[in-house]
Image (cartoon, rainbow, N blue to C red; front, side, top):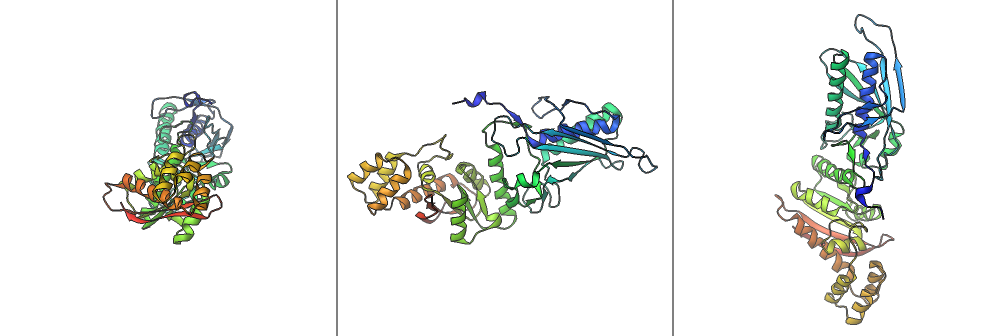
Length: 375
């Protein structure tokens, strides 16, 4: 197995957009595209990016616009060894002169989304270009203006080739970011398998749920458990939080930003790990404890023979099947322990949060329930 510290790091969409905007503005002022183009990141790094596309459009000057035209540059995102859906995407920046004193304004081009719901760090109607990338681009524009005699008053239109389709694989539609991707990043660097983007999406999902008045949210480990939980309670839209394996991220953020009611829905195996206190449910970072499952089965009526069979089971679902054949409610026991683990982490929230849990098998059948209980 490759060690995480040997995985190759990559660049965020925000860093790529900054590089593209830097090159485009310099070309708008000088007629020449820098290639490669260097940008400065918040941590002090100064990576250089090769341009994938470039285009300079000239127009005749007028009294109102003595320097008309536009410049477009594009950078292909390299996410390193991170399994990022935007890896290989072409991120373009088109820069045009703007009225004196307007500074840098942003527009969403094709493939970049627009904010339509409150709760995000951007106003409704704004292009989905997050605050840190905006600041990086503003700083880059000021640097180019100082070096080449510009005013720094520009419109920056960001676009992503095929971005609308790629965005369907992200949280954007349920966060109310429509039409494409977000331009993201806080450091400019993608750390492989850090999963920071997913965790950030969980947090933004909670923010949007609160801003839109949701009082009952569903944190699900996958699409099947989300479908089942949503059907049970009639939930939809901004109430649905795709927590994946990151139960801890969901619970810790809810403790600071509480919603009155939380349902956790997930596969039996993943919930058995939450029941044991694991907050990262990924198979590479936590394992099912068959001894603990055997003990839980015994606690709800299982005999020694069943416990021995569970300890020797191949998988968590095999253990569940053994318990169900013996009419022992292991699914409920795991769901209740998972609920109690969630409640323990939510303790200390400024508002009480009622928690219940739904456990399913691979076919989407409910195999365990834990009744609502207040944290």
